[in-house]
Image (cartoon, rainbow, N blue to C red):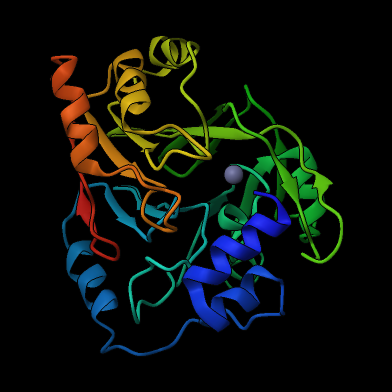
Length: 286
Ligand SMILES: [Zn+2]
């Protein structure tokens, strides 16, 4: 997203605080509060009792927190202050890995603050991770083709068709941030998740299916910067997934695709794929 468009789109939607964020005013991201009464925390605690399950919590936009049966907590594109983020939710206390698909502000989000708080390792493109200026032990710069193990999760970095730049100072120039990425997360005794990042549909999704056999795809459906519902239905077919979790919609007016539209498109293809529209902040067992 260009600077100007970003300011217009985000500023219009987020109001003063959000615009300040979009423009890079040093934010104090909703620092993790020790508020045991926060509803999201209570919900997460309850869901955590579901032993042996993989839990996925959508934080709105492209942000997710995945908890595996083996105790790994993985945050993906943690823009925890997005307009659809669950109100009053507390950040995860412990995070093993943060996956960042590309350098745009709505995906890097609060990566640095979360990494600082939890000492999590940050996985993303080599160039982006360098630009983030993390402590050496936490920066896991890599590229498509890379595979990493985090407890019982095996994470593969895969391609995405998009762009990637990073602005450390949003009033300054955009810096090249390497190639955009998607992530396949194979969870022992659990599902194989595919988080597509920001992307259009591309034929190599069939290769992702062949190599990793994902069962659940987290796909952008908003359009404008990514796939829309019609294209996401084509992607689901290439990926041969049973379930699609829609993301990257509704955050701004430009991201107009809806889960209902995706369901309609999938019906047209007579695919058996189900749409699982998550509610922000609610942990869902997969
Ligand atoms: Zn993007």
